[in-house]
Amino acid sequence: MDPVEFLRNHPPFDAVSESGLATLGGALEVVYAPKNRAIMRIGDPRNDYLYVVRKGAARLEKDGRLLTVLEEGDMFGFTSLLAGSGPNFDVVADDELLLYRIPREAFDRVRGERTFNEFFVNGLAQRLRQAQEREPQPLTGSLGAPVRRLATDVPPFVDPETTVEVAARRMSEHRSRAILVRTDPPGIVTDDDLRTRVLARGLGPEVRVGEVASRPMKTLPAHSSLFEALLFMLEERIHHLPLVEDGVFVGILTDRDLLRYQMKSPLHVLRQVERFGDAEGYEGYAREVDAMVEALVWAGVDPARIGRIVSAVNDALVQRLLRRAEEDLGAPPTPYAWIVFGSEGRREQALITDQDNAIVFLEDTETAREYFGTLAKRVVDGLVRASFPPCKGGFMATNWCRPLDEWRRLFGGWIDTPSPSALIDVANFFDFRAVHGGLDLEPLHEVVARAREQQIFLAHLARAAMGFRPPAGLLRWLRSSDDDGTDLKKRGILPVVGLARVYALEAGIRYRSTVDRLDAAATESTISREGADTLSEAFRYLLKLRLQHQLDVLREGGRPDNRVHADRLGATDRRHLKETFQAIREMQEAAAFRYRIDLLR
Image (cartoon, rainbow, N blue to C red; front, side, top):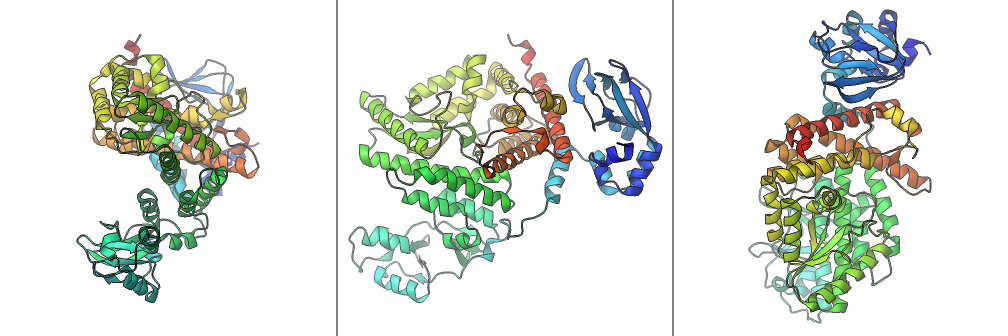
């Protein structure tokens, strides 16, 4: 392969014009370096070349530490080239090395091409965002469109003294599935309310609408996006969403409106969950979620947002199972909370994975332990029927069902006297989120808030976050891995999750999602804004790459996993993945320095 053809097949040269490639090809030099030969060193005079690895590998080092391995198609020297300075890193041949060396003059001439220039002047976070923006948009309408696009006319208003018989007649006249009630604050009555709150209770047509209305009415600004409306309806468990503008009702959105817009709507799955019986229906839940996720990806929804949607639907399933169990077992003997943690606690789960759940209850009695033990088994078994595998580590409510005081002691022990091996296993507990039950978990939040003052704990948690390291050389790793591929979860996603967790706990932040934690931590200055943006975009990119891979496997009839294979990656994704791994490694090094993990025993 001649030099120009080689460059054309590797980003960012793939975006260079033919005349630009001719300029580079006519000026470049071929350089050979034997193993362990230094190509450049910190302290060398001004660098005037851009280097591209043609064959072999080189080590990028600083202060004797390996930062990354440069492989075929990788570049180095551009930072000092742009700055007009000496090298910032040592570059040493890791084995026999063949390089293309492009002189400054040719490089500067081609930099006049915008896309090529952007690669060198923009950071990784911005390049990943731009790559996303350049992807083809879906042919159907976007969930970023204004919600007013689908809303129907505002339903009629009635006084609270109006009977349900008259209200039903007004709804029929206006062909509306809801009616608004002039109470303070305003209320709403839907056709579902007429069935469940009037007919099902044996009430007569003379009942006043003010007695059965939902108050206060849940509304959303009319300028909101369809995605915001969809997520709001899922999380609030409502099927009718009035829209307001400047304090005035201007329309209403229903789940049927969204169902017409998108066949595999999350609201459709939510409806099915609400109709599940004691056992029937659960077996098809995973297939419905898979189809829903694929439709959301096809509609162009960000994978981080897809996680919030899937979590809202999963929450509804758990709540359904818990309510059915409570109906059979009787009222709980003491207040409790069903909590989830891990990816479900962070609302970052897309396709179904194994369970991570627990129960916290208030009063520690024999009756309570027996009741919640039975409740846990009923719900965990129900989730298994819905295709949620049992947690391999046993982190499920059947094993983790404890009174609040015991949970406080556990969290306190993990924070005050951290054990490295224990933290690796229990770090996910710090992502906990209540899904059902009325128990106030503020005492547990207060214990977690102590973490920001415990530097040894933060150091141990930072070290636990570094238990998974991205590979230094992507191509070499992919080619030599015994497992035939690299695990995006272990090698990329979990390191970012772990870093975001420790930065958030140090800042005293209660946010659970990785992106929210990084943004808030940057605001509190426990991480730089640039570092937070880089990790956030790296996280989004890895989620997207993993989800695309998993959906491809599903279409082929396989079982989704977290491993990406070299032959499934294009040149652009290989470069983005390599840069993402390198950025994560650098952020891990920064965290190791910040929390002084070198002082831990």
